[in-house]
Image (cartoon, rainbow, N blue to C red; front, side):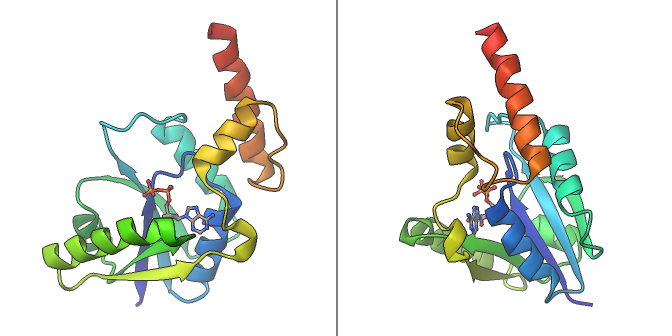
Length: 164
Ligand code: ADP
């Protein structure tokens, strides 16, 4: 069985992430989308909120499962029985960091391979931070994220504004 993990922060999941996920799910028997917990990293959505948003987004993909993990990504791969970890590449700016991560992961565990998927040109500019910024200033995000993510962003933004 070919198993892959797709790790990230997904704060929140975007159409760019989903595109990578759908393409991965078409190739692998099983894909775990894994929210890597990092207590040092402050996120906009909580872990549970991010997991719920992903779960709803992947409801139509029967071989995709949503999970979370705290620790090294290579240990995460082992934990889920995955031989491959998936990363998406947008622009050259992603490349240097991803090259470094792939190299360190290979050093830590030679049995885990990093596979890179090039972004769909349509989503090459898209990041979770950009989506949050656009939503914060009241811009339209319907082409960038699924409808339920847009609703969650709108709700949380107005919650935030009320306390500012
Ligand atoms: P991380 O904090 O690990 O970078 P992200 O949630 O930002 O987590 O991204 C997870 C993965 O998805 C990364 O490999 C990232 O490059 C990829 N990714 C993010 N946005 C896009 C996009 N628009 N197109 C393709 N890949 C993307």
